Structure formats: C-alpha cells, structure tokens
Length: 165
Image (cartoon, rainbow, N blue to C red; front, top):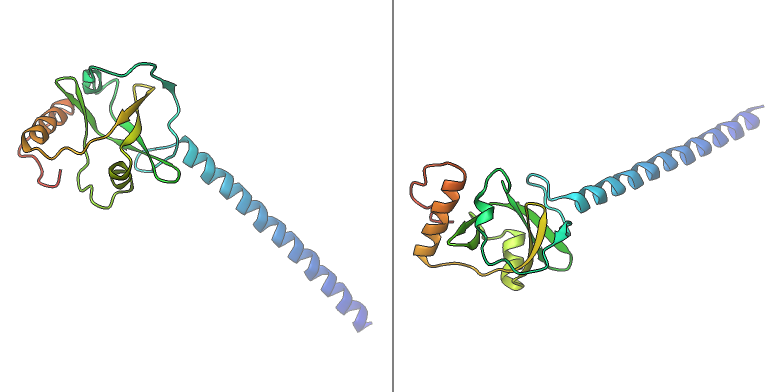
C-alpha cells in the first residue's frame, strides 16, 4: 500500500511541476510581449522607445518656429540609431527658424552619445516625423539664444543659462 501512495504522490508532484512550469512560461511570454509593446509604442514620459511612428514629412523644414507652440508641440521626440533605433522625449525650440534640442547633463546619455556617433536622426513634432541631421552647438551666443527660446516656450524666467546645458 505504501508503494501505491508513493507513486500517487510522485505523479501529483510531477503534474504540479508541469503546471508550475506552464504558469511560469506563460508569465514570461506575457511579460516579454508587454515589454515589447511598451518599447515599440514609446517614448513615454521618461521611458525611451524605439522607432518613431507617424506621417513622414516629404520635404525638409526651412522654418522650425512651429515647435515653439507649447500647445501643439509640448515636447519633441528624437530617434537616433546605434544598433537599434532609440527614441526619447526632449525639449525642442526654435530661434530664427532654426531647430534646437535641449540636453542638460548630456554626458553619458544614450541618445546624445549616439547622435555624436551618427548625426542622422528622425524627429517627431506635432505628429509628423522629420529626417534631421544633428549638430552639437558649443558657441555661447547660440546656446544663450536657444536657452532664451526654451524659457519663453515654457513661460519661465530664463535667468542664467545652466553651465551644463
């Protein structure tokens, strides 16, 4: 009789092990699908995303002043490339029709490093995607003008430009 009980217990543990494995596998698959869906639909808030979706603008933009409208373009989204597309939400502003993206404490950020390695990028603003070429600005007068435009867009007192901006 004890052999029958042992065999029954072994079968019970085996079937529970299979059920537990199936539950864990299902949770892993659901988690991977959820993470992939989130990755493909972002950037969201501070979470980066991948490929930017939207209508691609057929022509280059000669006047970016529309990005200064905070209601229409509260943030831009920039997509850079390393191995995979990487996109983030970012402040954007225009001075005399030229586009500027702000990057405080850029050192070590994935997107800014990728932009230095490969300046070809894509920018989404007001639901459209624009091919752009990124250039790092270092001239103090140009940085100051962009800082002023950023402050005006968000209705803030510009004060002094942050040294790491």
